[in-house]
View 1 (cartoon, helix red, strand yellow):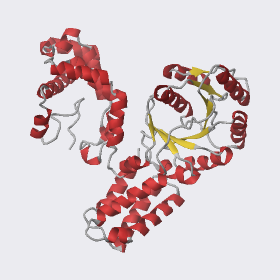
View 2: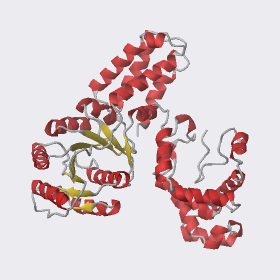
View 3: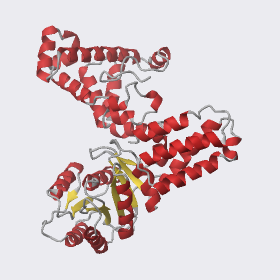
View 4: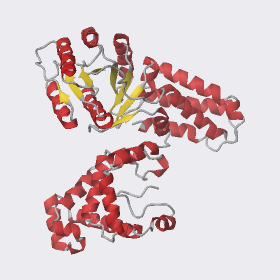
Length: 457
């Protein structure tokens, strides 16, 4: 997300880095570029004007003119104003009410409401230990109810089954009664969407809202929707008095305008970002971190939190203990590392949170995510003995492994070379050698990144 906006803003403010003095002329020129970058990113015009006016007022004030590093001070102003536009950090869901707490999801068709319902349920079940019931009132979209029922099973939530011939309002009321009778803490109701806002849809969602009195009314919006998202947000807010917003598909090639516009237009907080299709791919919204990502500064804090929550700590500790005991690093261990990358959303999702200066020269957008899957397939084609003792893999074995995985012998050689580099690194890490290793390398990881990708520069 924000790739194009990040590139344009970086170009606009890059010339000001290190400037000893800022004038009204060079500030005006930079703001002109910033304005164009925001408009191209589909940020609403009123938001662009308010943003650039605020930046200009602060940039030409004493805050910058008295700074020892005016260029850096100007960049900080842009960062601060981005944070202000996007609002306060997401506070999570409000559950302070008598159970069952009802959460209503609304939005246009294709925004990702059904998947978001499952993601919210997973967070509530795993993070807050709640009993969650999911219900769908979408009687129009083929297989909508089936999809939500399947997702409920995946995340450990209960599902309220209803006949598609039943009126949406009646389904919602029956779901509330079911949740009350069976002791559920939270009921999440997924409503029907349309391709565009229309009177019939608004009447229906208002009727459902009135029937179940939800504590949270969340607008689900596709980050790639641009101005349509802003118009829909305004319409839904007028109909429902929204309590919050969830931006979906924030991991896609989005221009980012929705993130900067919806909060300003509705006045409602952005609570979460959907960053992938998997049910765990939902992040609490932190405007200061998003602003840093927009300006190419990365979001290392979120990356660390992601590692802590999604990397299997038990397996990581077992590997560390194995290496400490003198056990060798083998291809089974390498396979585990590749799977950890996948669990975190792939290499692209990780690189999206790194500062621009740490990215490979080729850029995150050019990383072939299929490479990791291919290398896992190659390892899966090996025998257990070959994984434990890669040195036994000769030419004939390589040909068999390549044929079994649908790869080329060169791919097998590339994987084995990558393994050798990582094995050498793991040996140096035994016995507290990490500090010496990093000092000798000037803080850079040896070899390429897992998967054969180039070393960050």
